[in-house]
Length: 487
Image (cartoon, rainbow, N blue to C red):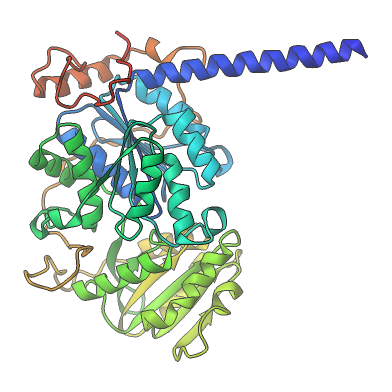
């Protein structure tokens, strides 16, 4: 019996030592990244991550980024990207360790990374143990993940605040609950900075080739300002940044029987407030038109959200509502009794996506708009793939810009004037676990010539002799306790 106790104690000791060594190696990787930006909030985290990375690249900083969102991506300093491989398709915050280790091989000036934790305790662990951000971003507080962070919006605000950096800076565009965020920031000795959307002009928004919000741009500009990047160079970097795969988009198709369809992918805005706001603004811009039809994709692990989407159906004033995915009953039962439109239930997690798509298109009029809301995963992804196979409708020119004085509010999205895009090399598909640097080799032992050459090119734009930050450089981390990278 004593022998078994000794074996257990030795095993526990070995695990503790291994964990301690791994933690120290991870902290060593973090020390090689002077500025770390952690983006948290309810809606728009992936877009803000890309905007922040683009703004910093525009200022000549070697910047690595990682998004979670619709499709997790590792974004290299030259803006090329590759998907983050996940075994069995499951996400886990532990993957941040491999991301940080790989990012450190670039010896970057900054890492912009999206928070992938939902549970409040995991958000705090993600900040204190995995990222240790020097700049935090808390984009907004919306009605989502109430089961984990709620039940009220005030509770959501306090839960999100657990990702604020102690003794650092946090940037937010949240206005309604700014006072709660300020209380939480004061408790952490964190400076809270408000990113005012009013400082972003309509002309600056028109420079984007994709839909975005003034709040998102204002946050990225504030982060860039904290790191010494001038506004115009930051804007140019954001204009050139590739959009997120889940970005709000509108496509125009021709169906097999000759119908003309305007399709709006609003899956990314999967809370009621954001969904209504996006649909209204797309309609105001003329991107979608009446008659309006809605597709609600349901997921078994988001039953509450399914019901929220059903509740707002009358506010969307849809002519027909299509329910897909599983369980559709959760959305159908939530549709108010006063709704006078049609409800078509095409639910089922094993329904053939081509048959489902054909059934939806058959119900549409000769010229109509279709808006997809709810959750993208599952039948939603398959539905998008089927729609993408339809020929594009090029019978008329799309709306290019919004005229001045249109009266839209500060969160108005713009349809940009077409502008040339930077051609980016497509990286090869990664092998399994290729995003993780080998555990046998410390991150600071990696020296890849192409990456160092890239850093030198960025450094040349800042008149630095090498790829490293000089003492007192304007973009240097403002945290006096932050360790400099290893020589």
